[in-house]
Amino acid sequence: MRSIFASLIHKPAYEEHAKHLEKVFADPLFDRPTGIDDPARCALTYRRLKHINDNLGLSAPLLEDRERLFTLVEWAALADPSLFYGVFLHYCTTMGAIQDFGRGRDDLDDLIGAMVSMDTIGSLMMTEVGRGNSNANIRTQAVYDAERQEFVLRTPDAAAVKFPPGVSSPFPRTAVVSARLMAGGHDRGLFFFVVPIRDADGRPCDGVRIAPQRPTAILPLDCALVSFDDVRVPFRHWLRDGAALTADGEFTDPAGDALTRTRRLLSVIRHAWEAAVVGLSAVSRASAAVAVRHAHHRRTSGRHAADVPVITYRNQQRPLFGALAAAYVTGIVAATVAGPEQPVAGARTIRTTSLLKVTVDRLAERVTVRSRQAAGALGFFADNRYLDYQGLAHSFNTAAADNQMMLLDGALTLAAGVEYEPPAHAAPTRAERDAFTPGVWTALAATRERLLHQELTTALRTATEAGRSTLDMWNENNALAEALSEAHAFSLVLDTVCTALESVADPAAKAALTDLLALYAAEEIAAHDGWYLAHGLLDADEVRSFPHRVNELCERIAPNALELAEGLDVPYEVVGAPIAEADYVHALTAHTAVAYPDPQA
Image (tube, rainbow, N blue to C red; front, side):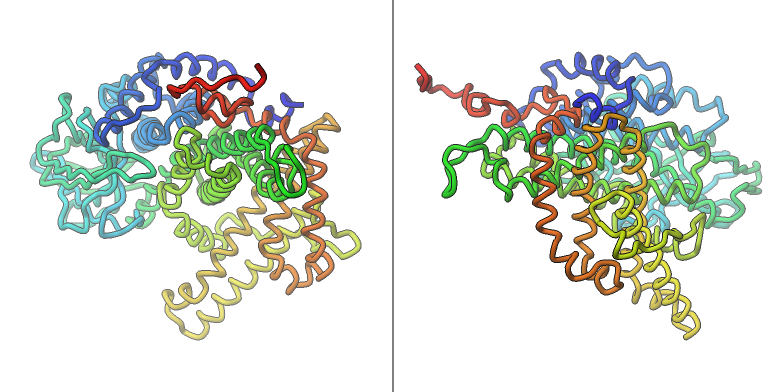
């Protein structure tokens, strides 16, 4: 059944790409270093990135080959979360911005070519230190100089300093910088500009001020604060996206107005969200698979039984099988996100991708924490990777846009009905209700989404009629707005999961997956059991029965747990966690200077 399970995670083309990457990642360059300082650790990340690029044989941006790109994204996350950041920033966000907003232009070929060959490493610079994670109120200015037909990029004050791009290591760097276009004395909205940051020798370019920041303990990155002191930017480096400026400063823009232009600019982050979903799924699947393996190999002598695998105990099964279920959910979602790109990145696509990023990130944190905790003290060993992977998941609470902000933005468009209709599913009756079967999962989730949408829109309408300000209106309903976005995301995930389940033809495999995914759905529904109880969608007997039903699921999952773990299709050689080995004791102690006798001799 392993191959059936794995088919939900990876497409057939994955094997070919993975075989190539296996050779690339086998280089000693990817051995995990010890005893090196932060600058050397960051420099190693970029040497790894360059080594990968040199072995890809690229002739075009990797974003044009999504299957190959996302296989690399996955392996980079598993091998080195810091490397993952380099991969998605270079290939996805920086080159994605040039391709999206420079589409149809051949005068950018040299800039794209330098990035394809990695003669320069890309970075996206949007957020500013005085604006938190808001990308809408950017204050960096690109002032049009009509006489010289170029732009002057400047940081008007300390609050407009760009942060936290990873550009402090001395490598050739080129950034795509978001700035407010000032032309003809008017603010024309936000645009991207391609700006060299470090020259071929890795030195800061004229007018570019780079203030390195200390790498964080959980994720070593070469973050910096970057400002611009009248940096001259050639006209062709403006990613104008159909807009035009005449020599005398006359401006036209198909977007229509500055607000629409700003919203259009933010669409580029979808490439980061897609990469995040794939990378976070990879570390979720690795954490769960390693933890379930280890729990079968690790033996304990407890009060109730002597020398049994720890997975025998329900207090290991419940968190680990829940982690295994969540890991499958992230894998199924990632396989969908990594599919063919939508022809038009409309409001629905942007909202869906952003909410899936939030959901998968939260699941990744859950999975990595549970997996680490289940391993006991060994979970804190750096070689066993849990802390690396947990750090990556934690960083994406705010990386590629803040999760809470995306939930609130999503609720804003849901409440306004932007490419959205609330679900019309009828609430299941008591006679037909079993929260552990797929049809009922989706009906309960859809009903919660519909009722929360109704509650939020009613609250907003009432506040408007009472003359409340927009700030007060949303401030009072933030929690409700977040709940609606979370419910909508849960419905999206369940639809994706149920579609995947329907594609499984083998009865035994389908039954095993249904039990596992029922555990995921049950955990999510139980997290809001008070709400469901208050709305008559569950009764007290059903809520009280949840722990017993979960135990029944664990009992059915247990015989298939190892095979389900293998079905997550994790390349253990890239993960490199000793704890994943059957003889994990030998794997952990073989390098010690002491020779231990064989107890069987």
